Length: 107
Image 1 (cartoon, rainbow, N blue to C red):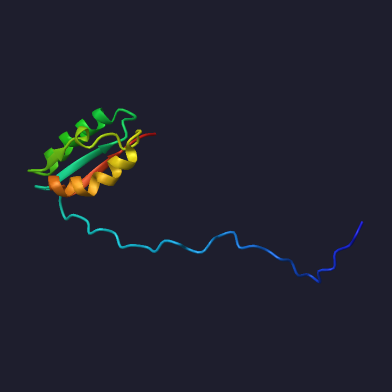
Image 2 (cartoon, rainbow, N blue to C red; image 1 turned 60 degrees about the horizontal axis):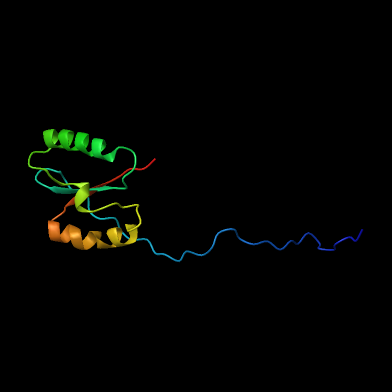
């Protein structure tokens, strides 16, 4: 059996890599949803159709004039076309005057 002579010195690697992405500031939060247009985004999993219906009902009761653009308008955010669907969201949001989005909800 050979004995290594390292005098207590061991080479190691740092487990984290350098950062390659810079942090961006978060978008300013809305003060209220009153009178705003909210997009619904869904991955077509776990009863989103039912969940969004309940959310709409409750948010309309709390925020007068809130408007919803349903998930059918945008397509499946987790399907075979997800890259195209997600890439098109900024343009679609601008076209439709979207102020906020709710994205749900596979488990």
